[in-house]
Image (tube, rainbow, N blue to C red; front, side):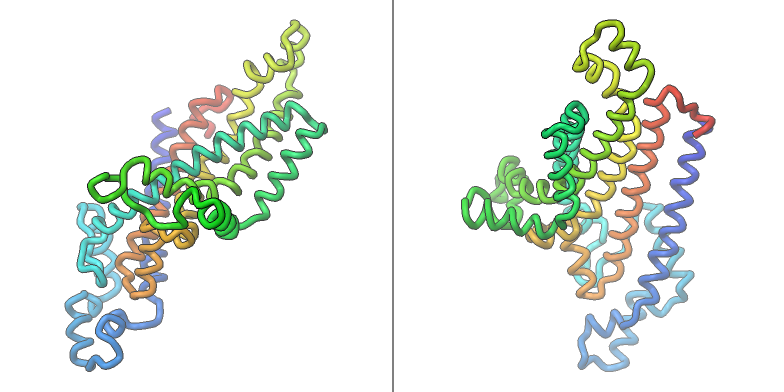
Length: 320
């Protein structure tokens, strides 16, 4: 197991290293002058040159890259051009919205997707199965941002059960609270979970049906166990092994997928921070946020690989 973990960790580090080079190179080659954007069109060449020197933009690209990576490894981040605040503080504040939103969406995805998939598999080729598969196909086809708009029109505009957007905060002294924060993230989480739950339902159904054809399932049925007992005691656990991989990928997608939904619901999360940073040419913020998202996706895949090897007795870590 230790060799397996070392291999996966080495892959994790190598992926982050390659990602950091690509992120820096792409953003560094973007057209436009950050100093020009900050100072405006009326700025003189002398003032632009002075600001470029202050921001370190006059240094060679390699020096800027090593300084950036070295700062991250030592726990230091550069100050944002727009906010004059370390990017770590900005990102930490916005993660208080984005991470709970992604977790809520993942919980809805798992509850709805697995329940619908098992329900459909237990009623193969019957009305329930056809209905679930039709709804899942519809869920896959509907974009998250468009579904989010429909939710706003129904629950916020027509029924007026929740607000159409914004986030009151998690602390009561700021005018929010746990319940207020939860209700503010409820519709965005549902909008994010709709597509992923549809995908998970189809994967769960396929995995359960494939497991039902195994020899040990027929043996259990021959011993007198009911179909329901075999499904919940023997089939579901083994069917969840390949589904676990999909769930890991989905959580990684939900973390990055919050960017668009946060714009629709005007949530002060990572998504709005990225859009504002791009508009202001604040590439320091964009660079750190993109690398953070990459790190989250790679970390989730690393955890899934480890769990897959632990849960599946047929998979030896040395063979993984």
